[in-house]
Image 1 (cartoon, helix red, strand yellow):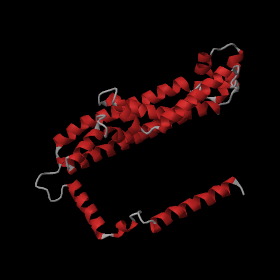
Image 2 (cartoon, helix red, strand yellow):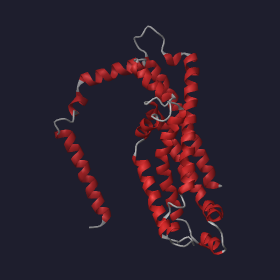
Image 3 (cartoon, rainbow, N blue to C red):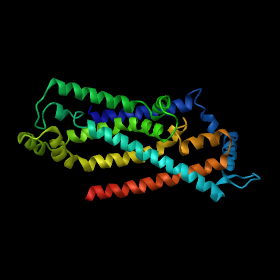
Image 4 (tube, helix red, strand yellow):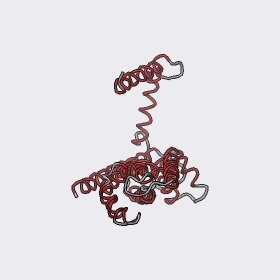
Amino acid sequence: MSFVRFSLYAALLLLAGSWGFLLLGADSNLGDLFRSQTWSRAGTFLGQLLGLGSDRPPVYLQGSEWAEKFRLAYRTLAMSVLAIGIAGAGAMLTLLPGARNVSNGELGGRPSRFGSLVYYLVRLIYTFTRAVPELVWALIVVFFFSGGVLAGAIALGLHNFGVVGRLSSEVVENLEPNQARALRAAGASNLETLAYGILPQAMPQLITYLLYRWEVVIRTTVVVGFVSASGLGREFRLSLSFFNYTEVTLILLWYLLLVLGVDLLSSWLRRLVRYS
């Protein structure tokens, strides 16, 4: 049996098992989906988000509230930019030792046990940093820094460093080695090989990965905001805690604008990179 066919059968088996748990499991709560009380609660909650039945005007219709949330949206955007900057800087510093073809000499260098040790150490760091979720990183970081943009950016940057770092190293592993080998043979140092033989080939793909992760980071800022990391996420938690549902709606609208804006900007920048 081929691997593709085995994967297909395994996926179908998992799908059937998942639906079997939903249909037959005693604690799956699937029946709640078809109860009128569930949909009545959902309708009530949506009505509260829209401010229906309230004596006060909805927050999302007040210009002063939009201006106030703009400052929080700006801090959220700054947090995402700083986070992806931290992840990108870490990836740039470790993409060479984290690539197997650098440690084993395929790019023209000399293989060494020390290089292999560094390779496995860097890969272990990649695995650890991306295995820990952003929320857990944020809970750890706030013990060292007071809640704010920096704490949220560090938490997001650490997690995305593992993701971008591994992708960056794999870009180097898939490069055409002739250019780097020629530079090594001419006596180029590691820094010169990186600047003239590796980065010119790898940079378009690296920028693409960074821009894609930026799109993910802007969505994840709400998660670190739940642990008082500042921005719209913190305000979202506070508004839910005080049952200010129309304010929650305004925050969601700002998040929607941020996500759309970052997605459009990222897509435009990726097209520039692709055709440059």
